[in-house]
Image 1 (spheres, rainbow, N blue to C red):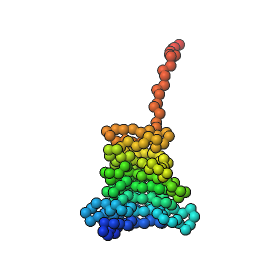
Image 2: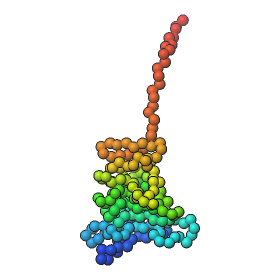
Image 3: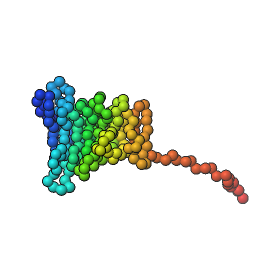
Image 4: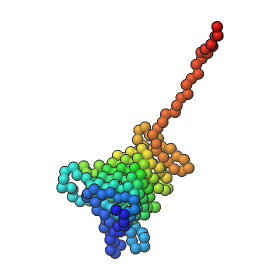
Length: 219
């Protein structure tokens, strides 16, 4: 269903526009915002929180699932994939937040879409881990990462929440991604300031001409 959701922001403070603890899909034509009256992001809360900030699901092994196929996610501090959350981004725009585009605590897959972090952010995806429901896993298979300057497409913390469980097998990047994240069998290329990741294709070696020349004799 198409429409616009706008979060409450009394006195400049805010709460999530969406708190998802179920199975939610966002498609083209949907706009989810958490903005101040002047259009700046309301940076106290995430625009969407997928999962549990406190507590846990009542069913063992259950995870909240958020799938973004299109639309616009705008404002807030960032889009957050929380404890017990799985998130899949296939399309759409994530923009005009106050920090990174996405804060990931559990399992995040990016197949498409555009991620544009705030100018002062360290990068697009802030990946962290904690206990068992906070695995800190990121898989990037596609999408456009609109970072700039020293911003990184994927970054993590420098404390006990550090997670290096990230792999890149596709996508385009306006700043160079960490080569440690490039999956085995894939290569990083650059053209006109844009980096791409693709499967490595070994060069084809032309056959060596035979030294033997066969001459047909007519009898």
